[in-house]
Image (cartoon, rainbow, N blue to C red):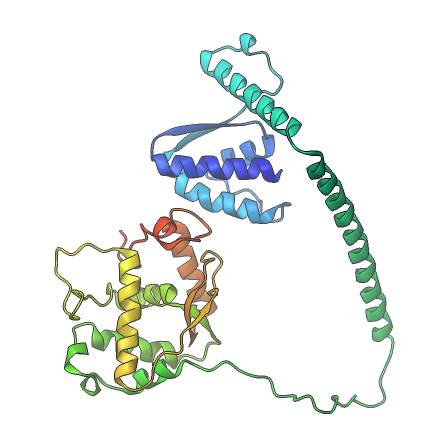
Length: 333
């Protein structure tokens, strides 16, 4: 099934790339039926299916291909091409036969060591599943016994182990910027964007949400959504007002946003504490610079939804390829 889902995802990516009216044929009834329902506007219950990760990927990629996808069809398996009603049906059956032949031919060229490794892997997975079931049963028995037991005294914590739970702290550079005013900054950083950035930082730190690691990509979209502005602009040497005819480019704007925030923090003597991490996101899967900031789970989810709507490929692994066409948040009609 994972092979059929992967093939369907690749087909939808091709449709998205071509941006032309397209029809797709599938030899898997489950995939074809689900895509047909989505195309008709019926959101079928796919979230509890096996291989949920690929179903999620298929659902996300379908959103990008939907404007160009006109229909999805089921290829008749093991059919005679000569008995088809139309030339198009004959072509699809021939294509399905050719795909099966290619798959069988490829299998014949696999070395014996690959099949031995495959059989060993299948046995290992089956053995691991049995062990996992036994471990689960053991914990169930422990829980049942614990429920029926009572302790006379509250157990003491082991000596030498601290009971204090470490808590995340807001980035020191952002805290310093939240306390400063525009007049505290050098003249070269006093641009039309500066007061909006400072106020956005104050608003960001004013809530009591959990402090998490957030990438500059997410912070830029948070800024745009909260202020209705595109972000800082530079000619390469000077921070200045954005020309009316300047083109917006997502990757460039993220880089400018990072540089501007770092310049502001350095100007008040408190550098941003950037760490290379995987951001708190379901769609951004690359490592990048992150800061510790308080942000609501609803805002993170809204930013993820924005990426799902505008990214070229999901999950996003390369900025230029997958996020190159992301528009500014809050500026889309």
